[in-house]
Image 1 (tube, rainbow, N blue to C red):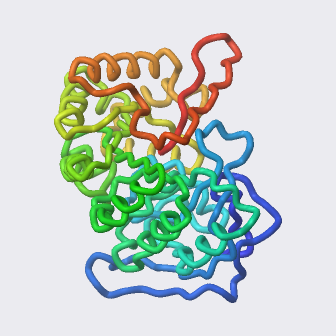
Image 2 (cartoon, helix red, strand yellow):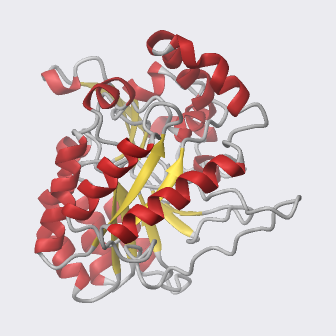
Length: 347
């Protein structure tokens, strides 16, 4: 395993020269409890946890914190699967079962936030893998991370599919009193059968919407990233309406649709899943994604328009309202053919 290649930039898809830790800092553990059976944890002591997003990225933030690498949510479409290849781990089962844990993340973050060089920029979490995946129940890194950000009044946001975030509700309420806090929950669809096969390690969509409702009841506005919208499986008008209606009923402050994108690493894994569960769709996907990782712009525009119209019908506020106020939306790069730009990709 190439621990020396684990760098901050590699988490966003680009290798760098300075490793965050060396192989001598790694402890490998397994646990016999049912929820962690078959999963291996690689505990590391990181040298840095504030990761700068590469300049070429169009994300509306510059800094991230990712206390974990690999994810037990096991979403077959997860774009972060490619990052496991930097450790010589496979991007399929290895990504789901070989989890890197930065056990000293809260202490390192507190030290970095106290540095004179740190300017108090917004910090995004959950943009690579979910910081509230199952491992967080054992390692409990997020309370220390949130407390460090709160003590420095540093704005931050969290994107998650995990209901475990409610464990830290009091910390989030306290943070919101001193800085800008943006919370978004990812719910792409409600179909139970689809959820069980495509997102097997996540809480059910209805439970995630309970998170949105609970946060709102405690004064923390929560947006929903409706992602991914999966072509030919969750994109028909009736299913879109069902999902947006449930999102509105949960009290979401916004809904932002994102169509499935299939980057290298995730594409191979997703297509294998598709061939097993929906073989009749394989050729349609090959045609739809023939030009690359993203669905055609006409398809993205159609889904976005439908969701926004439904959101307006059900009284949900303007898209992106759930993001922290200090994040400036990214300026979209003009498309080469003059049509609308490709959507941002957060999941």
